[in-house]
Length: 140
Image 1: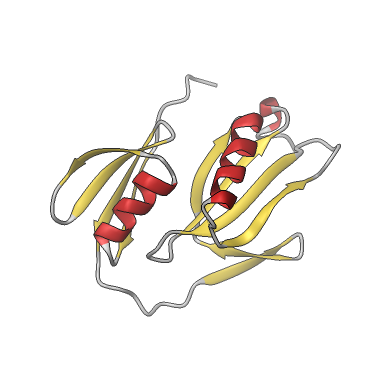
Image 2: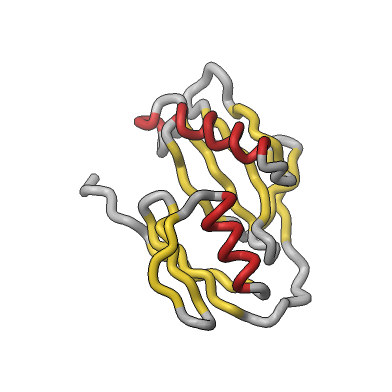
């Protein structure tokens, strides 16, 4: 596998200022360039851009995983195990409303991972996860 490089993702938000504060002050992402229609963020070493778009009435799809309703689409980052634990605790202290509370999947098995889901103020679904052993990220 070649060296990991940052991804770039651009997402729609219907309230640019509210989402700017969420990504900057709640998720602690450093703000980069911006205009009156978009804002760049350092999203855990990756480039996330929020773009203003009128609110959509589209219904979000879900997929059943472990008996939980996982929102589709969603995006996020795989964090180191200890970083995930600290981040989850910080989000709880900031009273984030979780779609799926932080929990551990496949405990004691290949691919053991912690995961959590929540939404930004525009309804974009985020998943953060961590693998007990990062070498098992793509394990079968």
